[in-house]
Length: 95
Image 1 (cartoon, helix red, strand yellow):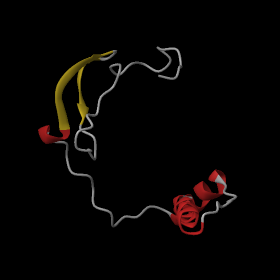
Image 2 (cartoon, rainbow, N blue to C red; image 1 turned 180 degrees about the vertical axis):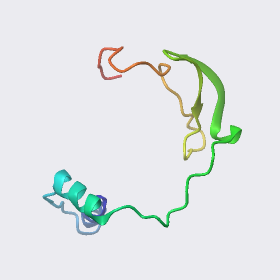
Image 3 (cartoon, helix red, strand yellow; image 1 turned 180 degrees about the horizontal axis):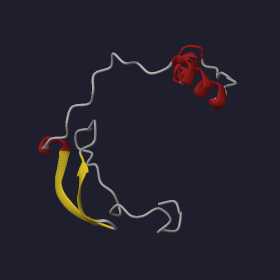
Image 4 (cartoon, rainbow, N blue to C red; image 1 turned 60 degrees about the vertical axis):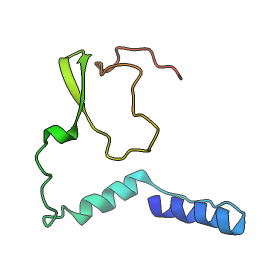
């Protein structure tokens, strides 16, 4: 799915026209399940203090630290309007 999306964006940039794709999430899931697990992938490294944000926040489950984002953009701070909360605790709305 990602490949066809990248191909469509490339086509739009190069040729100036869009693309249409018919994809199935269910079929993709089936293919991934049939592919099986990759036992050669190394295990994730244990969490360290460098992985955590230094800011403690009050959540619905108590005091917590967020994980640092996997990437950053200079001059664009990662922030959230609200601390972590239980699912369904807020009305859905666009910010």
